[in-house]
Image 1 (cartoon, one colour):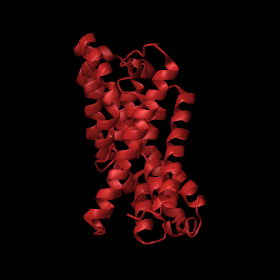
Image 2 (cartoon, one colour; image 1 turned 30 degrees about the vertical axis):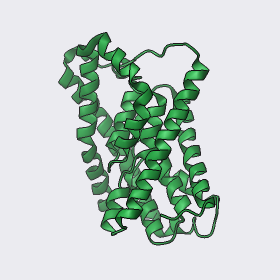
Image 3 (spheres, one colour; image 1 turned 120 degrees about the vertical axis):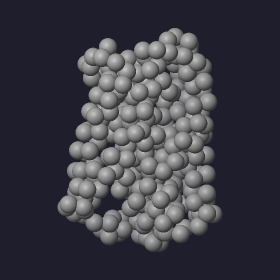
Length: 284
């Protein structure tokens, strides 16, 4: 139990720099940049899925947390948000490296995740733009300040620090509860869910991937390396896993129905991709 508490605190502390820098950038844009910077961000938004997917592939889930905040402020598109979520590697890369998985396996998994993220991001943005017609989507950087009822006039650094502390406490509480649950259930009990169960394995792994905690990526990667989980099931879980990105999104984005749609879309893309990988007999 004490280890679960320590791990939750340690994982959350790692996110602090990402959270603070993200809020600091958003506060700067709101207070200093003006309409020209806002227009520049909007014009470059269609290429967001490429950059987002590449950044999301870096270890840890800081970029998914950052993307959630940026999307809540309508600085990035939903396609960019989904690209970051799908490519987020969280603890997958450190586990693969520590287990001497081999550069070939690591590059294959990363390339598949980044590729699916870019493709899905572009398709989603094209679909959303088409359905929205010519209606312009406005930038809502002040959304977070209004949502939290904070005093943004208190200064960029102080306001960014306030947001960082609030989100940190929220994430810490969630991670603490999830770590305790996983510690009580155990990884071995999860292994039985994936043995010789096509499709069901991908569906179950996708649910585990949605758990907003780095433990899910560790479990999924480790089970695959031990031969308990198929490549398709592992990929379903890792694609659906966005670290604490989903938890942050539900906290900062007050559009509840939209959040549910994003979660279901993320899960669907992850599971379908995993089933396709399994049907093609691809092994990493």
